[in-house]
Length: 361
Image (cartoon, rainbow, N blue to C red; front, side, top):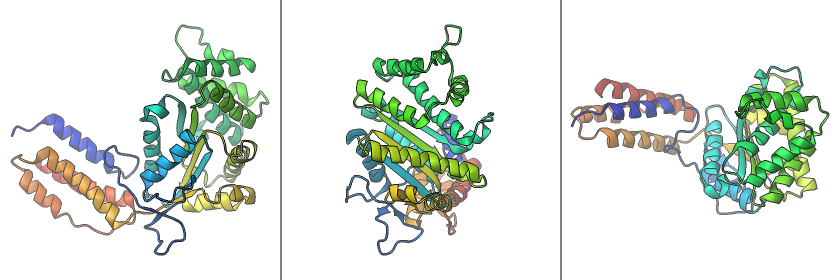
């Protein structure tokens, strides 16, 4: 069978995507079991979480994430989650998978703003303003950008966003002086410069945007997926400001709106950093007591599912090629050493398969 250079590039890219052990790789999502916290047999290979909607039939991560989406998009209820995990256990993969679930469903995609970002980005923002102002401006700036530029949204949604900016005399943020629309990064910068010195109440503005948009599109939902809490670990002032911001947002949603607001927020970090953030504030702790997803390091069963996905991809691509039998035998003979977490297993196994792939194909 003639060998296909395009196929080789595709498989090579597939293995190289898996090899770092980070992020979400399409079509290789491994379903992970979920148990209720405190059940017998719980250890660091067990993912635990409670349904916020009261659904008692949840057994895996996808069901849990879909339940959170239904709770917010369909039931119009506030959803807040901490995702607490050890390094290398798939925190960012989970967040990106949730983003994928949200933006690939047409009934959600056309009626939502979905913003995913790492907190580490804010430490690179060239500004003298404090961290909380940077965070609010980043969230709100990206929200306005999507409301105005996402062509899938209703025209009325765009008009609401423009009108709110006009109310603050911030309509100039949309004007580049040319026929071209301003791009995201310049808009972020202009938005931050304007609102950082405007003495606006950011919490009130945030919830006002939600209220006004949902008046013109009652199906609309706001989703914020926040990664890399760990990047602030050595910066106690930033940690405290982050705690204050999320406490204020959660408290407002819980008390003023009685959780009847289409808003979903995920905040992701290592177990120690999430625990420290919660335990350092009794009010925050009382507001989020059932909201944490404790993500496991991974189990042998889950690692074998990754192995099977990789093996099947190789078999499907090269079975019938003249070197397939030799390559396949070597792949099956790869020694499976114990792995501490998903990242370590992905780095080891996909790396070994990639070596064999390059040698034979």
